[in-house]
Amino acid sequence: MSPEPLFRIFAKELVAQEVSQERWIKIPDEVMEAYRWLPRPTPLFRAYKLENFLKTPAKIYYKWEGANPTGSHKPNTALAQAYYNRKEGTERVVTETGAGQWGSALSMSSAYFGLKTRVYMVAASYNQKPGRRTMMETWGAECISSPSNNTKFGRSLLAKDPNDPGSLGIAISEALEDTLTDDKSRYCIGSALNHVLLHQTVIGLEVKKQLELLDVKPDVVVGNIGGGSNYGGFCLPLMGDKITKKLPMEFVACESSAVPHTTKGKYTYDFGDTAGMTPLLKMYTLGKDYKTPPIHAGGLRYHAMAPIISYLINKGYMRSVAFGQTDVFEAAVTFARTEGIIPAPESAHEIKFVIDEALRCREKREAKVIVFNNSGHGLLDLSAYQQYLDGKLEDWAPTKIEYPNMVA
Ligand SMILES: Cc1ncc(COP(=O)(O)O)c(C=O)c1O
Image 1: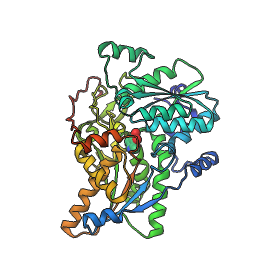
Image 2: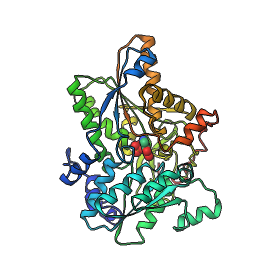
Image 3: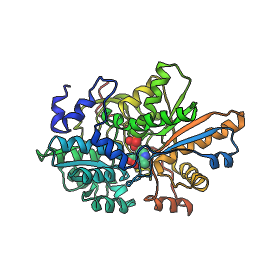
Image 4: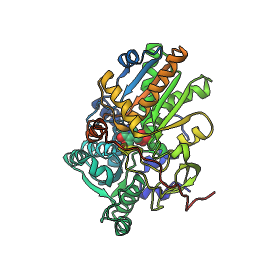
């Protein structure tokens, strides 16, 4: 499709970035100023205490994205999207959120740039994390449980099941439908699309510089994938080096075994939302109607994967692995007890891999350098931690994977 039909949905500059063939796009001064206020650059830590605990010769480094006012990497793109919308005269932005991290980030960024905001929050997370709604409302946004009675699509789902736990795909459909009812509104998206990964590359550009300053060369680059934005932003600048300089780096993307988009999904064209309103995108997908189990890592409950990450996995530049939530929380607790940080359940997925890899290094006596993106804190996920500590956390198997609307 041509980019023009997307102008009614997104700020024009963001559409231009989505389809850009440029290698570099400058960060506007206003966004740079906002990044300093987050503050950026974020720190790169060496996980000495975790290494000692695991008795591993591996060297573990992590980029810490959880120390800003909202608690994750999401403001890196929220500030950019709010800035371009403000510049183009948008009055109100509408979006979806899974765990609430993205909704919080856009709410805070809208307060910063002076925009009204409405957030459709996946019902399962809305109920699990009421504090996130309070944060969004504190920044002046509206937060609505999705599916909702606000949209035709939401009403159709609630008529079938009043307790529908929702999904990111459903919340995206509702946000799009809402955006189209009001000329002064534009839609903002928290992950998956090219322009979001582009904004997130600020993480990877910083980490490259930080590693160069330390004279450290990574062997394994790890992150979690919900829609693909934090890992994309973290690893793409390094992936550039792997491809152009033929560096022997390994890239590992971690997902939930309950939502195994890239480990069990198909690489094909599918919609980005459940109602089928978005353009078709070539990506790994479990099918737009996939019923995502209510795992606590709300940000990993998306049926599909960023086209860029999907491509890299499909072509073998990167591999992906999946973990169940009790193993993931066990890793999160080990991390908290050694490094002090209580990680977001999403981030704990890569921590699980990192711990396993560090133990493999112990067995093989390999001093690999493992670098991962610690995408956020779990301080609003404490009920999930409590369930784990009380031995009550459940593991979820994937639900039925169906591809009703696929183009081959
Ligand atoms: C802390 C955190 N990490 C990771 C993710 C996964 O999303 P993405 O793959 O877009 O980074 C989310 C999504 O909400 C999140 O909140």
